[in-house]
Length: 319
Image (cartoon, rainbow, N blue to C red):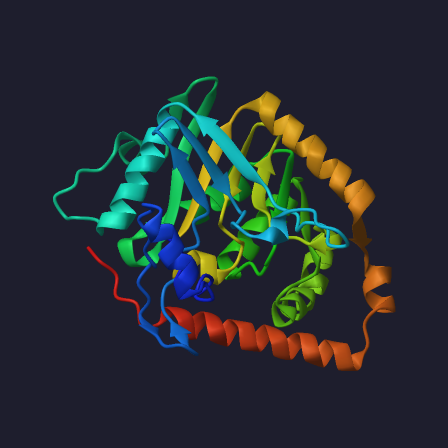
């Protein structure tokens, strides 16, 4: 199953080749779609499950953008390979998504545990599946981030390809900073969506005033989506820190409680900030900004916020 917007360029011949090979293929249903226009919910999952035993979940789409090719380095992205019970839970989610969530289908064990905000034992780690689907009253990934912001005692690192935190997130981040939590964000220096990048840069002044470290990844497009907290646990998946992920797209993350693994991830992110990023400071921002750029960034921010409302206002939530 593929997203009706992002995969609309697939040719009929390619789809026929898949079906002729015995592959069941389906587009996620949009609200309104023509050859030139798409208006509807986005299936933003990036998930593969094999034999209900292994799963791969993260930010990677199936595309050559994620391969190093001659003269074309790969986009930066991450996925988590998981085995055990969590793979079974993810497989059930795939079945539900494919079959359309019949009302008689019971909640899985993982969903029941999520309602109590607890973790599910999975081999050597504590794991929980987290979903955002506003229409189905799911805002678990957003709650994971708020949990990090609320309970962190030492540090938070956020890697997000389209970082535009809303009012609630900004207030929670500011409270974390006041408690003495060190917050750093790793975001794109280059972007495949320029208006989004300009809108992000409009927020730089706010981030710096609140003592949040900003690192722009400068090697290629950054497409990863994850966050770590206190060297103890992390979240990784398809969720970007913005209102489209919070309210419009259907998102999937995995939360992992494993200090050894989390510290390895933190070390990887530290290496990226040291060797592949530009640290944004007040001086750097002043040196690279003028009145014209300020107007462009402010305008982009207003446009993006308007788009958030357009993409979400027509959804009817289900009980």
